[in-house]
Length: 115
Image (tube, rainbow, N blue to C red):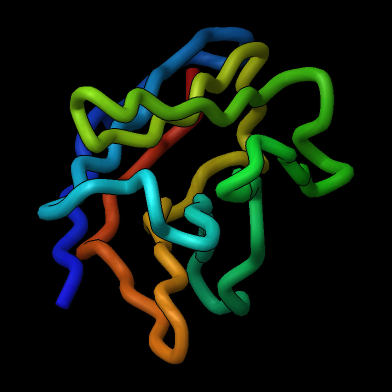
């Protein structure tokens, strides 16, 4: 059972930056992949960025060039650096971990981009 705890959300103006953190309850070294998803009100939960055990990454087209996913094995933490934020990035952001055969989710952290 992997527990994930997100932090770092908040209110930011358009063009600003935030860094989200996802702390895992166990070593992330052997986790197949971890990722960030987001869900805006009335919309489905969509993939934002993922990082695989081998180090490869994948991004949604809407965030390419603005967001960066990374990890710190020593801290068992995955990060999402978000730059040049737009109002359409407003959503609850969830951390995800895939440990076959299960998917694990954090509780989510709210990101609001507004002036």
